[in-house]
Image 1 (tube, rainbow, N blue to C red):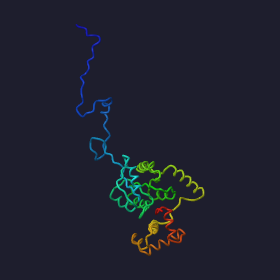
Image 2: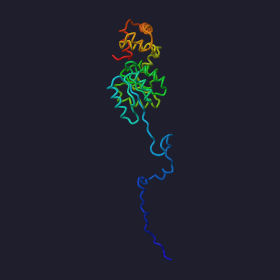
Image 3: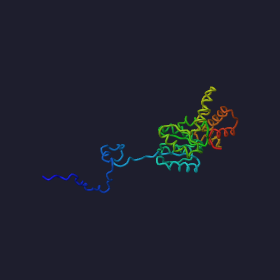
Image 4: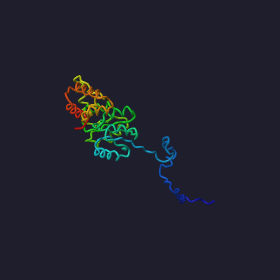
Length: 267
């Protein structure tokens, strides 16, 4: 009987090549094969990567250059997409019905209808729509009005290139957003008010009075205001008298100055 050699020469298995189009074997691939891949959502194809849907954004600002700059910031992100642009609040309302946005970014001060007015309407008409206010005004009252109108964030135009993208993502996560400096100022101011027995400032004018005031400040006559709002001239005059009384003012000029100060129109 022949004794086998003590150190047999190892025999290498024949080299195989994967079929064309198939990735070569790598460490861990066998283990991975035993675990099923992440289930695809309903309606997605059975194989291949999951389809990605960026956040659809409605952008409203009465300055075309501002819209262009903001759009460049947002469209540069893979998860954000501007699908509609509006030049005022009324146009934003109309576009919200046709463009199906997930998020609306509204300038505070716009002609015909302000961003705050539009936010109130959008919140009522489209409860699932997230809203951000974009403004040049570092103003406490505007911030509280924005929250009351249904906005989940308040972003200054001066730092939009730094904060807007994160504000959009926070809004879509259901989280509020406010730039850090304003948070500190608001908390300090609020604590000062509480210490002195004061409360968060309430609105002075009704929503209808704001609409009338805005049109007055834009130079419209009582007849034009009545036609725009589909009310009588007498009702317009009554609203004007009520506003003068509430605000302690005397004439149209003082009303216009007030409208500028609270952001209903721009100077």
